[in-house]
Image 1 (cartoon, rainbow, N blue to C red):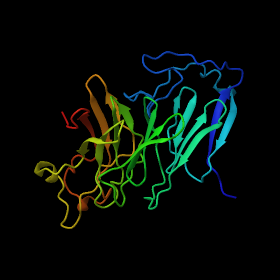
Image 2 (image 1 turned 180 degrees about the vertical axis):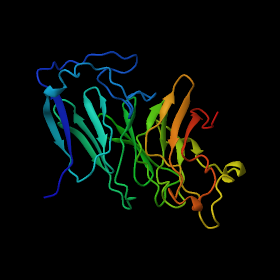
Image 3 (image 1 turned 45 degrees about the horizontal axis):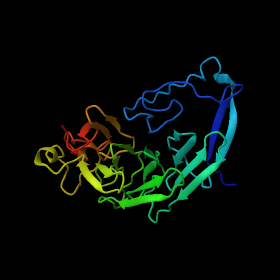
Image 4 (image 1 turned 135 degrees about the horizontal axis):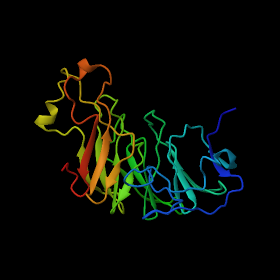
Length: 278
């Protein structure tokens, strides 16, 4: 019998259903981005579960996905609703009961083979996600209705958008994976949160003589690498986006890509208004 992916919610025996804790901008029980905050804190202020009582956790409810899939998503929790993704599916369930609120499935004619997706971005009632064929979709968090759907200009073989985007100040920030594929390099996009229009694009391997000189590939070996799997962080006071560009490719055959291979294997800071490195 085929195994179905399950999402398990747990609750503490005898614990109050009330949520305690404080945050300057996020409700204590909410988790609004892949890292909870734009700064990437990944820390919950909730204190109900601790070292003394964690052993009293018990299953509360289970949601069984209608697809056979490995989950690599980081669920968001917003006002009592849990949102998560698979490669082709987008889901919303009640965080207390696991009852499904809505489900949307978008099959891909030519999947890239990764089969992984890291989750949603969120801003002002809208969820944002990439797809395995380099599309970006905005969904209404209430009912899963598609608000907009765009295809990025780098769509092609091996290019995917599995990372969880982040959103801030009317913009959605997302980058592509696929840097382990021949000829695919990483790019960061800022999209208009209302329309999906590209505001700017940042190339991890820009077409400048200084950068290209750091890739001394043998003739016929294209530049490859610098893609994105993990989410971004953002410094709202400095208006800087920090992005972790992945490895150059091929990973281990250095003879095929001698040089410093800029700007793969780098953490890059990008001005969110201009798309330029400061």
